[in-house]
Length: 228
Image 1 (tube, helix red, strand yellow):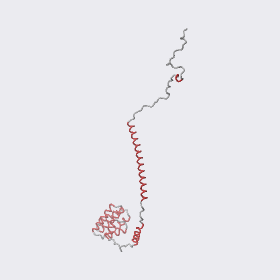
Image 2: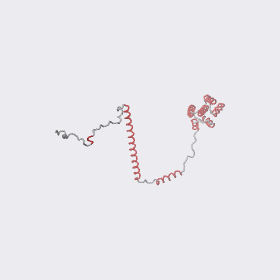
Image 3: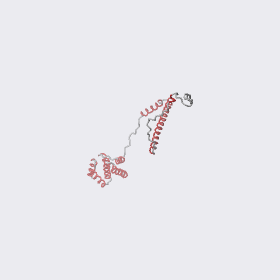
Image 4: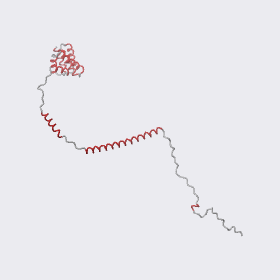
């Protein structure tokens, strides 16, 4: 009887046992594929020169604002420190002496000067007739008294004063406002009548009698023409 069929097989040390640990017997499970969507971000695009310039300008603006804030903070801190030092200096300075005492003699002197009588001249010098005539020639006034006084003074002027008065009246008869211009022309005509230049005076008087806007000037011109 062949006993080889009943003998157990030879032991194989390299063969794995069927009774090992479960984790040793479990087949490797393949990892499932990821269900997350793939990134669909567009590829990076290089910036254009305009965008780079705009970004640089924005950075400069932001930097300027930051520097301005820093400068303002430094300035405010410096002012605060300077004020603190000034207050400390004022507190430490000694009190100044009062100036009320020296002002008392000055107040007394001022009161004495105010109480002193004012010395005035006994009488002021009255202007001469020539000065009065030249004053009327430099500032003619359209009044009856002024024209009457001018007629009397014009006869008493010497040739040099008459020439000066004629120059002033001629200038005002051209450059002054109309009321002053008409009064100057009338006084000039009266001056010419007093110096025997009646022809020139007659032309001015006739013109004033016709075109003068001042009723008094027109009246005096008509009266003077009637006297001739």
